[in-house]
Structures are given as C-alpha cells and as structure tokens.
Amino acid sequence: LKYIHSDKFPFWVLQGVLAVQLVALFFTGSRSAWLSVAMMILVYVFVYFHSSFKRKKSLVQDVLVLVLLPLIFIGIFFPLVQTRLFGGSVYEVRSITERVDGYGEAYALFLGHPFFGVGAGNYTAAVYLKNSDMPGWVYQPVHAVPLLVLVELGLFGVGLLLLLFLLYIYVFVSHRFKTYMFFCVILFFPLLAFDHYFYSSYQGLMLFSIVL
Image (cartoon, rainbow, N blue to C red):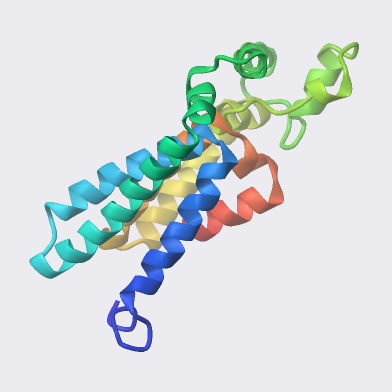
C-alpha cells in the first residue's frame, strides 16, 4: 500500500484501471457479474465504517467511480439494461428457461449418482448418455458451480473438497487474510451461483485460484 500511494504510482492510476474494468464489465451484459459489483459496493460501505479517516477518503473515491460510471452507462443504454434485467425479449425468456431446466436436469443426475457423482468433467457426457436425441449445443454444464461440483463429485467428493479447503485456510491463511477471503467469497458468490466457467474452463479455474 505504501508503494501504491507513492508518487511513482499515484492512486488515481488504480481508479483509472477500475473505471476501464467497469466499462468492460458493463458491456459483457452478465447479470451475475453486475450483481457481484453491487455486492462489492456493499463491502466497500462496510469497510468504510471500519477504516481510518485517511483510508475513508480513498474509499469514497472508489465508491464514486463504482457508482457514477455504471449510472452513466445505465442512462445511455437504458433499453438494453432493462431488457437484460427484466427479460422482456424472446432470447432472455429462452435463456432463463434453459437455466431452470438445467437445474432440474442436474438434480436428476445427482439422484442417480448421489455418493460418488458422474465423475469430474463428465457432466455433459452424463447428460448425453441420459438423452442423446438433443442438438449438440444443448449439452452444456448447469449454470451453478455448487450444483456442477455436487453432480460430478458426489457427496463423498464434495466432502473431501471441503475438508481440503478448510485445512488450507486453517494452516496457511492468517486471521487477517481470512477476512479478505470471506469478502472474496461474497463477491464471487453470484458468479459461482449463476455461472459454471470458474469450474468448467481452464481460464476460470486459474482466475479463481489466483483470487484465492
């Protein structure tokens, strides 16, 4: 932090990077990512009331960027945002229907293999074996990492995974960083709950690992 606030690397550089990332995030159209930003703002508000006066000044500047920039884009592209949030178009209705159907499909697969799952990386193969008459693009992982992990690894695998994660936190993570990890889990929760990329793709696994 001392280096970040020095003259060699002014703090406004970080705010500029934050603004660029927000622009990119807005145009992804990802509702789960937007929800993560909203939760991030709540975390910033929480940190604000537990920080020193000097730190509060920088937090206010960050929150202004986090709030004002999205509001400007919402005002400019309001019809697109309205369609994306409230699902008025045919494509949005189909997207939501497919996701809900995917949850039911995951539940059925779990009931068939509750203890040891269908195997890591075998979700789409299991869906194909269950019903091989659908178009190829239909075979995709369920859009929820917890469900996807549960179906692929089963109760036994999920139990081992949780045990390893808790041991990692207990052995390697200090009390201070446990708080940071808690905030990271809060911010990532919408992405994990409504997408599968952080488990199903190499890039997602690397990104999530780096954050942890």
